Image 1 (cartoon, rainbow, N blue to C red):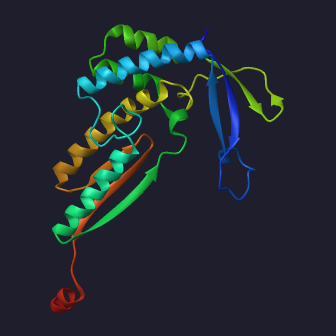
Image 2 (image 1 turned 90 degrees about the vertical axis):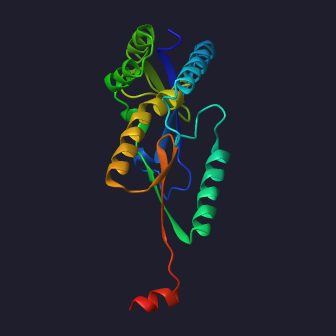
Image 3 (image 1 turned 180 degrees about the vertical axis):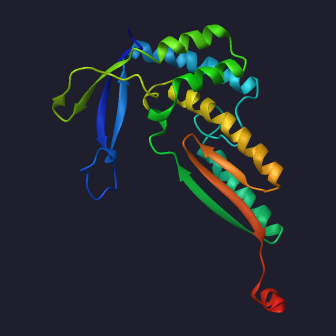
Length: 213
């Protein structure tokens, strides 16, 4: 019961010219405090297992213990400085996966848990945890009746960070393998559903370029 019922607060996204479409709002899930405590224990155990088994890709630097935005800033600064030493320019491309948490496929998540060697009891727990959920929506003074929410993972859930990181880890391993096969050097820094692609190219001065012409 503690895991299944929640309240979703509808919050307008900042820096929007208008709020006349659903995508300009962000639902934040509020759970029973006892449920959050239990989820926190499970989250810590999952983090310990995925880090000890080296399941998480090294580019994933957010929502994990001993990792933060500071680590990402240090990595980016280091890459830029190394590029300067090698006389290379550094280019970056950022992307955001829209509606990421609501788009997580439950069957795919369970498959990832099984493939990465977790105890079958964990997969069984999440097969029940992810379904049969209900939430009601609060918007100012308005309160809706309860609705079924059996898709994705609530962004406000305590377990959503580690589950989403685990969900994307295989994607980054496959992406890294493809880049190596194509002999393309691209660094990636990931913050759950926001990521940064970093590439470096040889920098030519004006006089060097002129000599080629």
